[in-house]
Length: 162
Image 1 (spheres, helix red, strand yellow):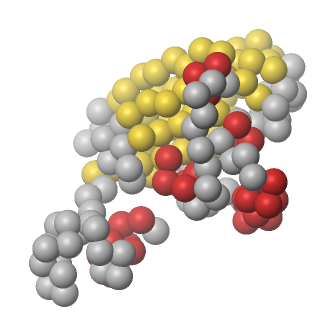
Image 2 (image 1 turned 180 degrees about the horizontal axis):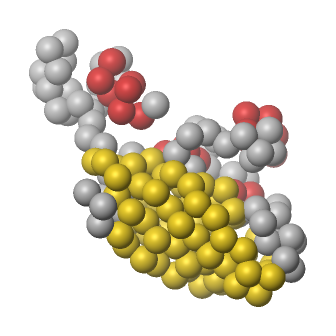
């Protein structure tokens, strides 16, 4: 534990005033889709499943240099750094995510919200991901010895994705 992965994400577009770093599973709840032009708006990256402390930094925003910290829970291994409006395309789902998160002022545990930039535009995001604990799906509990994280009725699986 404690190993850090540093990444720089260039040309992260912002249209709804914020950037979110999240596992792809966060977007699946809102029918989120990564379109073919996504690389011009956000970035996909992989991290091993686990819980991470995230330290981020963005230079030259409307508010100068900004930084912050957060906690990221990686459940699928596929992560996105983007303005969530570029992934959640359906207006009713967009309204739902805004209601569920109080306009990202109260995001769910496990996603990191970057909202200090002061406006829309294109940003370069520097982030360090420090692994704090590994997250493993159920690999054989007493109730479902062969589920390996696939049985969504398994309590161990529900605890894993919570």
